[in-house]
Length: 222
Image (tube, rainbow, N blue to C red):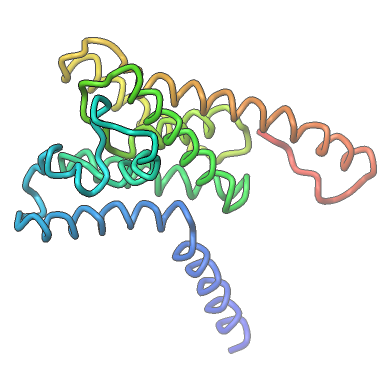
């Protein structure tokens, strides 16, 4: 009886970690926001949403953007035009985010992704003033880049990160009219890689110190 209770408690604790994961909550919130806006626009949840309609909710067009509207740099990351795009972003942020959280803690992945996504939105306001700006793909590119270079992320997480990056690049190069990787995807990917390299470099001295002291807390990074 006791082992069964212990097992239930263990699984319950793991489930609570999942349901309170910032990355998973972020992923779920993307779907919730999409459905709420579809309801507000009197549309089906599978119908494409207009970028112009989304501007009132926080979508950006650089030529109309004023820096006093800085909140839109964050809010726009919860807005999407196409349901499949939104679902892909939610899947990658939730899946890769959970994997990164297992190694780097619950807070860091979300902070890096959100800051990187916000910086990218700001850059796009300057570089692409005539384009509509929205979506969480910028944030997920940061997260994927971080996952691949920070070290310690499990293979499932690495696989999801590669899938996310390759899908995004393939859409840019072969499906969209750009014919190359968009700045809005290349820049956050580089940011994520740089953050991952820096995090790994900063963690090595602490690992070496624990190893020298004989601490059982030391864990390999890769």
